[in-house]
Length: 545
Image (tube, rainbow, N blue to C red; front, side):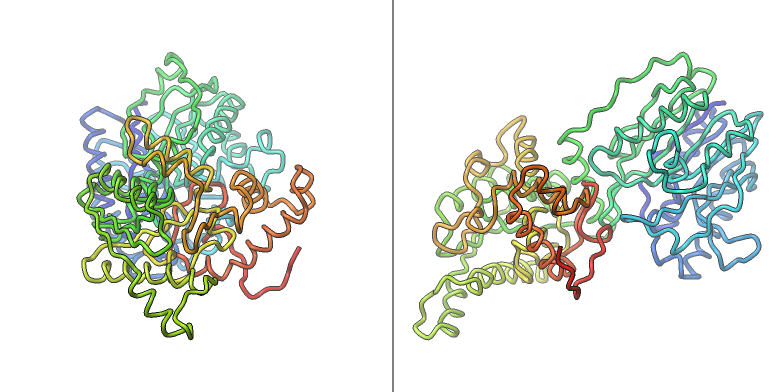
């Protein structure tokens, strides 16, 4: 069978345009004389649809688009497409389904069995699991069609499988010729390597080829990498679609065993770079914004954020604003200017001194600064107000510039540097940020070398350094990764060689900053555990390990 893999970037709720994309790819597959074309999970409505699934009009619109737009385009070609369906017996219950369309009819259906309810996933809130496992017969082949999580429970691969049901095991008992998995699997660093390893083992175990078609694009915090692929019955990856962009590929199942295996994929900092650009670009495109404004301090956080914004949106759509105070060093002001020149973006300098002085004159009896936390936060809030004024008047979205390390321990200011519409690097630890900066500079100097080499500082008081309040970032980031991403206890972290008092202090800072993070802009997820929807901690709680 000749099969097309269509890796699409749908927009949640933009059902008409999603279907037009699907139709365009169907036509390309027809031109190439394909028998079947496969689309990602929930590709008609976009993933994740969240509480739109409670809206009857949303469900009706999806049904109409399937019947009126897609079915007429399926003459002579099979189409496997993801959408939401109602339960046959109780129509108020919903299924996450893969439908096989052919010659204007629905000729097969596979519902998702394993509904993830961890990290960023909340599918048990919306869907009912499949009542049984099945295969779909089409053009002389038996297709074992399954959906995303259904392949993530192989008892021979995972030490502790998450579910009692092994979907592939049950489908294999029905004598399929091929596995086809449609997915909307969000990206995090290292996941693609793990996924390929897992699917290779599955195909080798069952001696069956497996086609994996993944969504691509950014939807809110989540970034989908695409990277769809085909594994032959020997457990070898023989086809791979592009990463972080839409793609269409054609395969012939009779030829899979003759194709040369592809080399193993090794993810590096370039994947984080490309993921953030895609997430940023799609966030703007799908929310209707075109222009961004970034406060440029001369530090590495704002420099990387601004460079990513230029890559994602184009230099003509990015405004850089320097807002120096009495504590801003000449070097930092020069670095902000040089970055803007290197990126060739519009650049403005708007000092905050006069506004800062007026506050000091009101709140300090003698009118002199005392250098306390209130004054430090005041400077950040003045800058946040400047940027939001520009946003309101000129239509630019403010990009916040806080990294994961600082946000984790509360080294950020509510209504100040946290003000904005998107937190681009909020899931990027400080040490990783330096890797990103060097990668951005790989061909020519974009981020000034002095920005990368100087000691990080908020410059909110004289001679301030981040290490005045925090341990070195190499140590801090290791502790944060163990605590936040790996859920390690204090004793487990200390056993890695870290000072117990330091570990307790870091964890205390993390716990105390939860109220800040709940008020932060949405951030793009690139690690295994990001702040936001995937980490649901109470604010009003008194547990202290």
